[in-house]
Length: 365
Ligand code: AOF
Ligand code: ZN
View 1: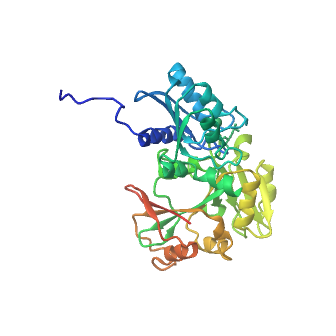
View 2: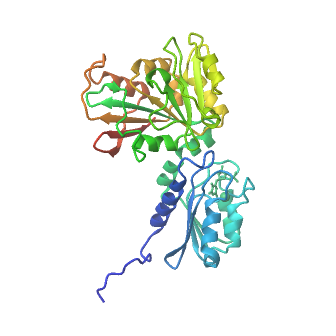
View 3: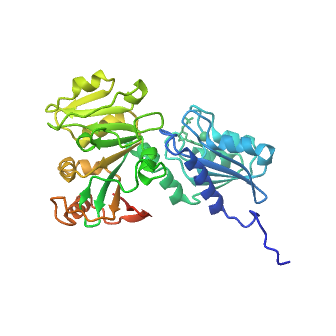
């Protein structure tokens, strides 16, 4: 009997099904905030009989979709969920109850829900019902998936990532490696993941929005910093919905206010532009994740991080290294890169993607 077995799931382990949960969860990338991304798989006799993910806040949770998909086959099956099943009546009823009612015999969980109204109560409810519960399979992967949700739950503040590009000789450059017009590009993927993106208006050229990324339904909130006496920003005429996806920060020296508020865009005037105030604003809007996109503005970054308190507000750093030598910058080779890393105390940048046009490095603070 030497015929290779094809398509059988019998040899798959818990890690395999949990990785599938994460894959399913990511189908809703950028759509679930302020809720987490969650995936669920129902497995019976070594076969997947049901799958689901949480599509959007307010809609049913992942477990509900997977149980629906499995129907009666859920009885005596094992449920895999990337996040602990909830045990509360929120916008939707508790998933722990749904799993008990469906008579699953085992539940394998990626990570405990950091939400204080859930935190281990889901596990407790399942165990009380006699269900075998395993916690912590592919835990690191599940935590990475929801790093912003977890941070927001534990601290009340949004998860903030700083992004910038460097040329190979270490100069900060005003460019993106993966084209923003290319919908599969790394940058557009980043934009999809974050609730808001902070950009310096002075650096964004004639349109404050990167090409083909005008504000809209599935876009982040665009926060434009237009402080100082920099030249006025050219805001294109936006629909009401698009205008609601833009906020402009100015200071007393800038002359933007009347123009932009006429166009239905929220405009906040500060004494002086600072990261603290902008992040307070993000917090007050209940945002979970914010991308600070600095393009070519080392001076601006230095300014923002000057007194050291602001850098405590950053959680992650993404650096794109572009494959060209930049002679135009006034900064000496590698100075910018080293200085930023020293300031932020990042010394463990890991390669994430390396393509033709750039290498993307990521690190945590
Ligand atoms: C799960 N499965 O798929 C998700 C969970 O307002 P609600 O009712 O949607 O509840 C939101 C909370 O439920 C959220 O903060 C998180 O703790 C949990 N999310 N739980 O069992 C899911 N999305
Ligand atoms: Zn739930």
